[in-house]
Length: 137
Image (cartoon, rainbow, N blue to C red; front, side, top):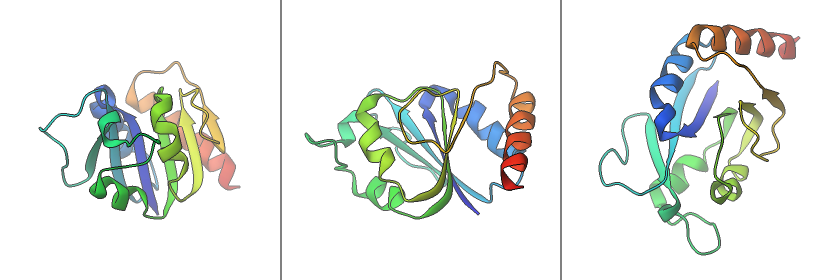
């Protein structure tokens, strides 16, 4: 299974812990959304950073690395939290079988939307695992 997790840069630690504790995500890549393009940490082994400066005038991607990463087919995309509308067009073009939103009101055609008040990673993963198991049945 191939999974892509998307969230604001400030949620980096939470999302990494979440991915470690989730069952069956397979290979995971992270895309962190940032307000300003920053030369530091633009790419790591499994993480990519995406800012509005990576978008052209029409909302398409200018960044070739991100284009290649986001063009890969995946089984699951999880979007955590709110996402600026500027990113919606690009995120909707990611080829995935299932889209899941966690605590997100973004209009990204989610197959599943989860809303939880839990802020602890273990409670969030238990909740998400329960829901995903029910969906698989």
